[in-house]
Length: 89
Length: 432
Image (cartoon, rainbow over all chains, first blue to last red; front, side, top):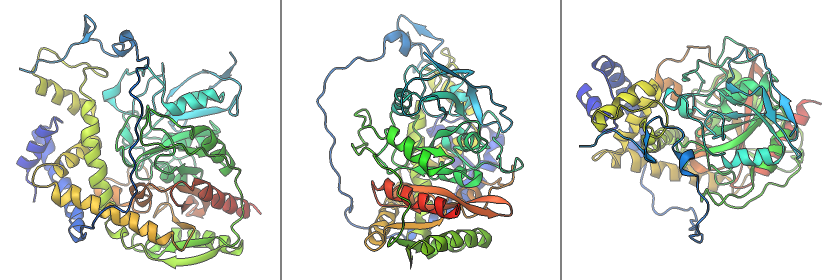
């Protein structure tokens, strides 16, 4: 059973932001969905994949990339060719 | 350069962005208006994923599929409405309001590619691109009465598709005829080294509407609990019609269906929780307040920018991958996914294709589905193809309560040609 404090913790881990008012509804929905997921307890772990897997390699060749001004075009907060971001510390 | 004028009466809210003048050139799609779902990057044209968090974002490059459309002269006339980031079954989860179903505007068009389906079904465009993570092309195709194909995983490049669940999703064609689906597949399947999950497997095929001697598997589970008996009856009639055209019907079982939906939702939410971490308001979208600490700024951006369903799925995925729960949810979901694949491998030893309904019901009323789990449950018949990576098509096969019903045909890996042939056979048989 997931409680409101668990939802708060998950929201913090996911950096999703949540308000106190939202907690009861999200918690109720979470429990309903997780109850449904319990059906996975019946799944027996099978051995190796029957899928054939193959690596996809290519030569590491330098190709043209986007010009810096186009990369920065979608931010309103560029400085000296860099993105400005919130402080980490 | 020649151009196509586009001034639709968008009464169904199918488009987020339209271009009144769209460039066109020579090629197999010359002069044909094509709509593109708004999670596929288009250079110079806003691309929102129907989310506030991408407000104002203009991609600096084209998705590979968009490059291919342009190379064949297609006129890209607009970007279509969708459930935010592809998360939904109705196109109601859009920051731009819901799309309405042209077959009955009091109903949803299905989702998440509901705008593309409505644009095609209403005749505003001849064809469109959608994306299908758990049924998002086939569901709206079925609900709106058009044709939609989810290609084999790895057949169409996802370069430039804004990712939601990489291991499940494919870009695919939507149109009013199987012939146009086939035409779009010829254009879309050119190899792209920028998506290392694609292989070079060009589609060069003319639909062959013959099913003589073809073995069609019909799993009991596709007509079982949760499927509206009236929808099941319409689809059975369609299967019977294929039998009359010379196909052999083989009833079969798909036991993994009992946990396929749970496996799907654990997998897609887990992948979403990682993919959507990039939306932080720094490089695009609403701008972060750089004076505040990182986490606070990030959380404010995401609480305001994402809709409730997107936040719910990011949290579900974060939970499923978190320490202590990984084994119970994510690891079990991958074991279940393997069993879905194994079921398909086993069935395809004896049958050529598998057929059943695309959706368990006809289109819902707008606002009818309010709790998330009941919405998820309506994806039960479409998710197995995504979990296994096999191709699947939805083709209109009649009506129930006056609303369109879709016949789903699922094929073997990289035999998209075969599901297109069966859909063509049904389409031509139905018009006789």
